[in-house]
Length: 227
Image: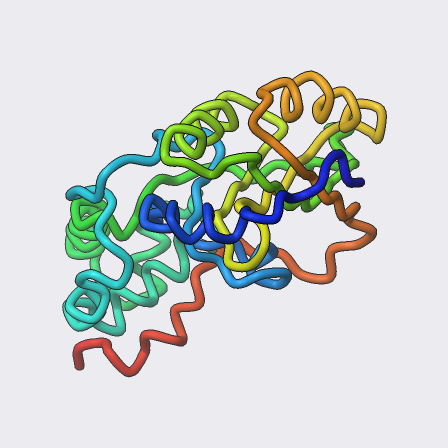
């Protein structure tokens, strides 16, 4: 649905403000299916800020980090990202280590920031959260101040489970989860458009999800692992 139109000078303004777009996390596979992602935040994460120790610049240290991992590290990571409830003893047995070395490896991966957190995944449909939308959002004026205001606002909206800055004619892509279409309409009117920052919203309702995973594709770094 479209709530407004884009001004003629929009692209010039977006080019001028492009320098404020910063990557702040891993990109969602679902979002990447629709648009290439420049930056990303997870709902509930800390608001976007300057690059620091916890948020390195895109690509910074990626090759060095992969080179510090070996095949056993990769197997441990794969086990944990598939089932974080596994005990240290179970993991150790599956990778051919005793419990103490396996525990030390996991702690090292946590300290290095490779393991961000361990969570429980919930079935949204069984909770009644059955209405899912990918929405592209254009700001009226994508200035630094407005980008930061928008990102601060969505950090507090539980309906927004993913937010990415993307290339092209829009500023953001959101993945939004609500109970039904009426709840989504309330969200648009009361929250999204209530900010007075948004000039256009295009909504794409999810009909079916053939694939969704939270697992990182570790096969893609296999050539960088230590022997």
